[in-house]
Image (cartoon, rainbow, N blue to C red; front, side, top):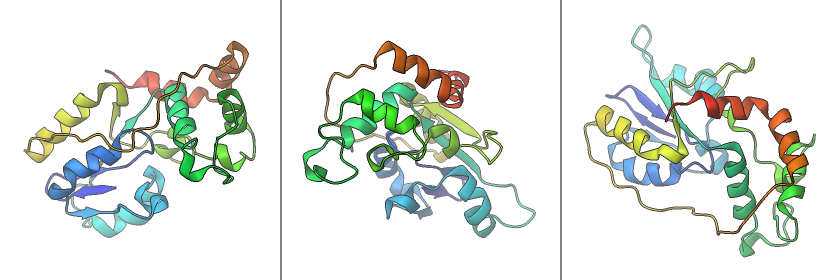
Length: 198
């Protein structure tokens, strides 16, 4: 999470959406940053509003706006699957080594999720308890230049994004039946994605 006081803006870091690269490029411009540990870095919109906004915002002043990047849901799950297949965590409960992508997505749709599939949901990250989106500015991962242009305009700077936390590449596909189930049971995530203009 990065906070830009003069620009009245907070960048919320949705996992696996390129925010590590954004943070690295933006850190010199930020007034406050939470970069570690990961569970604190990835402050949800709900947690921002309930716990951090009251601390950072001046009473009676214009509230800080929030922004986040969202990834297409199947692509987001593929990125998580590949990230958790990396050799350095093989053998841990979070590893997807030896598990196919269908099993990972089936685990993600389960309750409770097995450890290897416990990665949260983008729709919950940006919403309040009722499911209403509470992030002011949402951008698509596949149109990251729009987010960069927005930030350059708000911060009056030029940004160059490094490549960071890139998951290993692998061809992945879901079985048609499981993809249909995913689209039904994660409808909020697909609706969120579809609601964001390019």
